[in-house]
Image 1 (cartoon, rainbow, N blue to C red):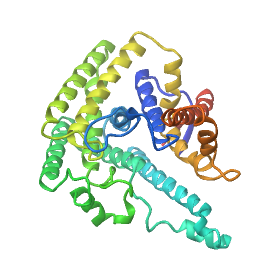
Image 2: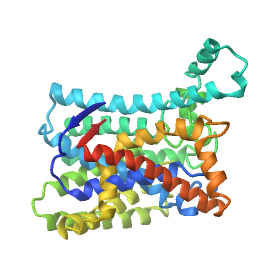
Image 3: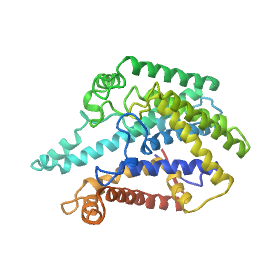
Image 4: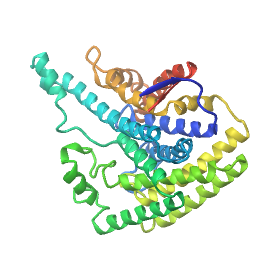
Length: 386
């Protein structure tokens, strides 16, 4: 993790705002106060699409665009510096995701009543020894893997062939889902079978089968990032802002309509990351980026809302990692017999509001806590790159 104290380079401000919206959205939906929450803040059970299902794919779409902007500085040619940057970032994203999972499991082991009778050295040893059942993949590992592979492809494959590669990945994955029980919501799904065979059943997401960030679904997620890369190439190479907005709208409309039409044969599912899910969310992401570019960069409309999301947008991954780390002192480790989250939700919010409203208010409060830390970094011109 490297820190620089300098102003970020000039580019379309809407890109940072949209990235900030996605990070704030990811923190919001990942940290409700209670299990019960309003329907738009929940993922679709299996097939379908909710607003919550959009935030992660939007971020991956933007990552594809910024990968184009980043590699353009190297003229899309391999070099020692470029290779070091790609592999370092990909490894850091995967490693930090794994480290956070371990740290949370370690903390829960230290406070577990099952280990209360153990001596401190024994408790430390038992709590630290979680590698036999730690989840290997997840959100940050998926970002790292997809970024690394997309960057390698962008430097190794002629860019006019990348859309064809995306099509091959989508068609191959669709055939796999159709022919190998890929739409089953149980352990007989080919995605679950492959994860269990390669990763081991103890290293996958235990609350969902198959793992929503499993091995095989990483393939369409990679294609998802490559779509973002292609959009970056087709749009950012234009000099005129009006042309950029127009092309973003056209791409967004085409992808969105194509995805919904194809959904009659290939259902939209985030948990399977189906091709139609990738196509529709990239289309909606492109459309939203066009709207924000018109509003913010063309019309120069900047207010408290844009400044709020810009704080998240300039330090996106750092604040997302922070939101996971803050769970330990706020939602896991008890203070005076209870966690801070429980004291606020059960002692303050629930007596006044319904359980769903209390859940939403806590999530908003948690976003605000992370934003306050991000604001300090923003005001000090500290931008943390992962």
